[in-house]
Image 1 (tube, rainbow, N blue to C red):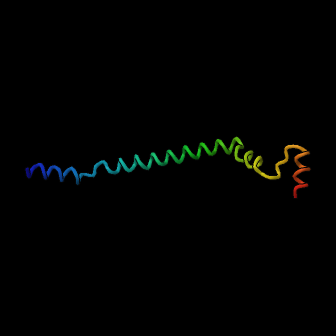
Image 2: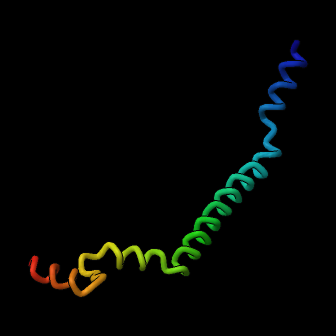
Image 3: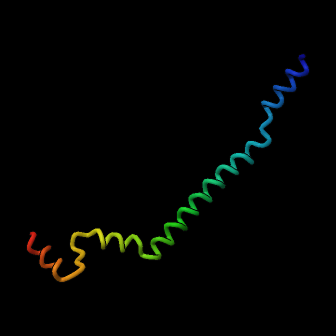
Length: 74
């Protein structure tokens, strides 16, 4: 019984794989950040954010009639 208890304590005190697990967690988080940055870079490169901002702006005039109505509403 005493031998089993010492063996259990030795297993709990053993930290040989801790650094490997920490490295795996940090590496996975870094890969997630890099994948997100690459996805944002693709969207920015396509101009999707700029196009959405222009279409959302109140001064985005699609035709002359809309421009006149917009000017008269002020």
